[in-house]
Length: 327
Image (cartoon, rainbow, N blue to C red; front, side):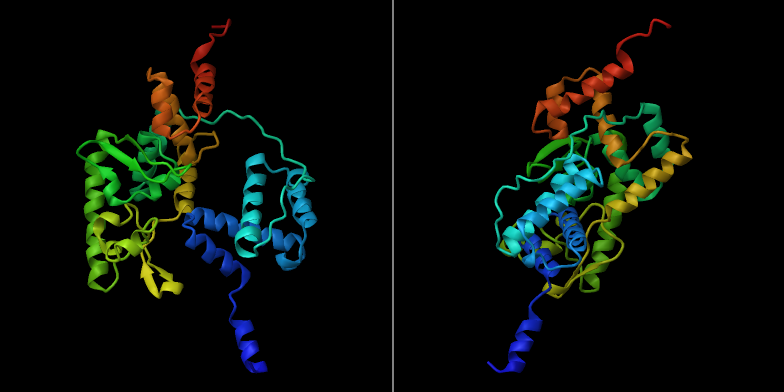
């Protein structure tokens, strides 16, 4: 091979972050996980003065993770996110395994009760939302979904007749069903009819594809254009997938809903720290208050451990439990 050809081969190799992105997509990681892993790997590289990770050692990783806990005082879950991203980079992309990282100062696990809204507060915030964000937050509160679970819903996951929502590949890679509020059925039906018109328009322009879960794309090549596989909350713009030389319509981004909720909470005059996940907490607490058993709530929320669901009993006890002597 000539020197020129060697340089071409060398320059044609994808950049590290592109390799990481491709690996994550090949292994069917979610878009949110992809974004999160890329973020942590970028921060890790910057922390080490932009040195290529292949030149770094186990000690560099330990120093960075300790920095997160000691200097930045991140939570244990945040530190673990960074760890998972870096370990994935080394194992799957760079093919290095440093083994157990024993010299890391671990972030402390703070046991904080979740923020919950009263029924009046939840309804007030929803009243101050408009359009798609209003419908999404209504589902979060009415069905107990996580925001990313709601955004990943496909048309076939909404069963209007039986008032059921199917959550596929939720946290822990598990499927589950949850309730669908009767009050949302007319709004959801109108919304689905609207995205059907958008889908038909896309097909007419030579587009209309979406990203498919698991290996369905290989097994059913034409399924990506079927309406039942389209996202219930599609993005306004089509995304270009360069490696496949095509345009697809993904779901809307989480940040738009997060921003809308914050603004609606301010307009409502609610001083609590409110985000989309607050409505999932409020769903669980409200069901508990209404007398539903903890096992039922665990199944609806998709919690692996009952211990996770039990935290809402502590929240409810604080809200409605002991009567003050002053009263």
